[in-house]
Amino acid sequence: MKILITDDHAVVRQGLKQILAEEFTRAEFGEAASAQEAIEKVWKENWDVVVLDITMPGRSGLEVLKEIKKSRPKLPVLMLSMHPEDQFAVRLLKIGASGYMTKESAPDELVGAVKKVMAGGRYVSPSLAEKMASYLAVDVQTPPHERLSDREFLVLRQIGSGKTATAIAKELGLSVKTISTYRMRILEKMSMLNNAELTHYAIQNQLV
Image (cartoon, rainbow, N blue to C red; front, side):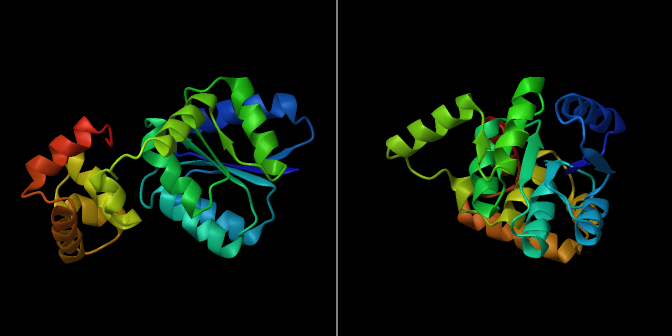
């Protein structure tokens, strides 16, 4: 059994490895500290499960997930996040994640999640499952950020964090002109006028 752990913090990778090694005593572990490293390791080797952090320097976990699903559509990917669960989970599960949990989750929850996704199931925490059920049960209007494409959603979060177009372009490997185009689309789709409104919305909706 081979498990790939992807996180840009060595301490986090070590902690996750320790938790899983206690349960999966015969498992082999691989580590990746960046999005690019994770993608290369998935291309080069066969893994049974990937534990993937959503927030990394360079390309986000969301984009890494898409890349993994292109080359290894059946490989289970368990997403880890520091963000409020409901903001990301639905989007990631739609793209093909096998599970989603926050880094604050208890160790036994991580073990259970890995077992479930390896068996072909999907994992969401009980609290998230409850939120998703009530979300589906109530006929609510789609929040504006749900209308955005995945790339637009990432740019919105960066703007909400107070980053300049130049900084966002550098981080996502795009031109400043492209970022400006995304910004215009985001403003249009969300019926907003400027970055201040976008930032206020992002903070209010816990997207940053």
